[in-house]
Length: 280
Ligand SMILES: [Cu+2]
Image (cartoon, rainbow, N blue to C red; front, side, top):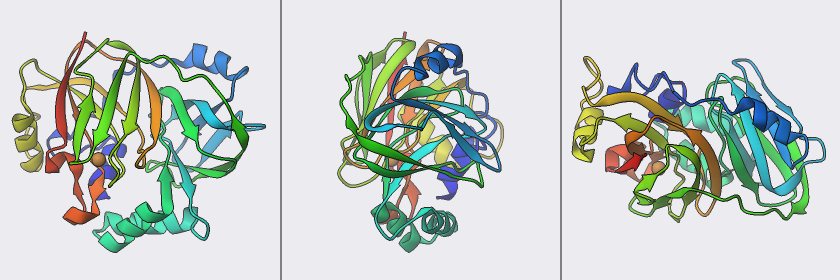
């Protein structure tokens, strides 16, 4: 999971080194925090040493509003019986060093339910009453919480869709408003995915991006690389989340760097999971 971790840490992949580091995501802080008091919601703060949760008391399964603060992307996870955060952390570290068996084990025993980068917000769906864990590649800590019986909630209105499909490839909207909420759904039955939206110069092709990623990131950033960016946490097959965002208008490439065990841990973007969209 090396590349995945690198991206998570903002160190970024290949050509994107030094570039993904400056997300322009406008924090939706104030309004999100106020809304939290009333709804099935919580605020997660990711620090280097610890992850803390506010508002998880009395939380119910089903759709939960989440707001993330701090230093890293928060991932909501649900583990299979007999597998826990310690196992996951160990397998993730081993996978990071190229252990594909550990990568497979982590995927097989973990439901990735989504999450957000610092300043980000949206909704995830907790499938059932039970125990959940918040994890971040940017933190040594983790946080556990429990959810009660499923509470039915209205599906939020969305302005567009980003869909992971078997291939792996991207489906969904070609055009989104520059500010709004998108649905991210993983309809790929074979593997988890996450979303990185990276702004690029108008007219940039997926071939150009692929070439830059494969070149290994030596030298200055490519001229088409622009500052707008957003990332989500990972979703397992069949899961979905909604993501609030506010980005500069323009052309964006959608990428996923989740490592594929069938390809010896190659990130999906390098397998060609790239798509161009426009935000206007
Ligand atoms: Cu992927």
